Picture 1 (cartoon, rainbow, N blue to C red):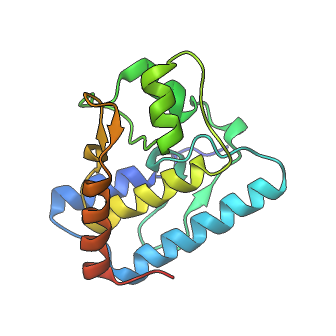
Picture 2 (picture 1 turned 135 degrees about the horizontal axis):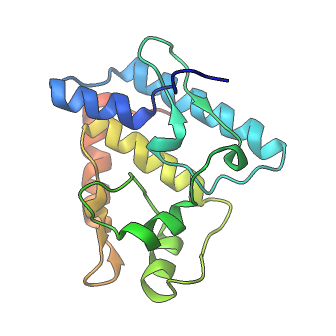
Picture 3 (picture 1 turned 30 degrees about the vertical axis):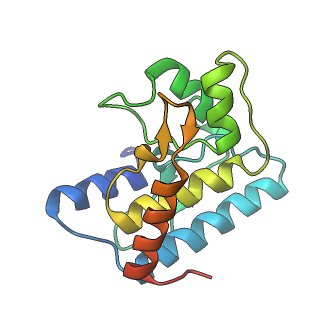
Length: 168
């Protein structure tokens, strides 16, 4: 049993924002590769990835590799359920990024989660984008018009690419 809970990616992200620090390209690549490998292993074991967000990825400065945990072991709701409880733009909200299908489902069918196997991939991609930009990117969702702000998303991706290069 852990005496001190490990830091989450959101913990280190927020601390760096407060300190005016950024992540290097190598750090972001390590976080991305380690997280993808962790989720790939969980997928092979049949574990769903409906809780992919900065609060469910454990990362301590200087350790190089993040840790992901079987979602059934995390006392937490799915991304969809988190939004049902907190609303999207709550000040103290968890960092939840829904796939386009989940977002439209959230706006129109709030009681029934709309998800697919790629929803976690989208959530991870947008979380990595936030790390590159050193800011939350909730503005990619337009709740008033009930659409994804794809122009803003493309702009963010371009800015991140100019800053950190491509991670392909």
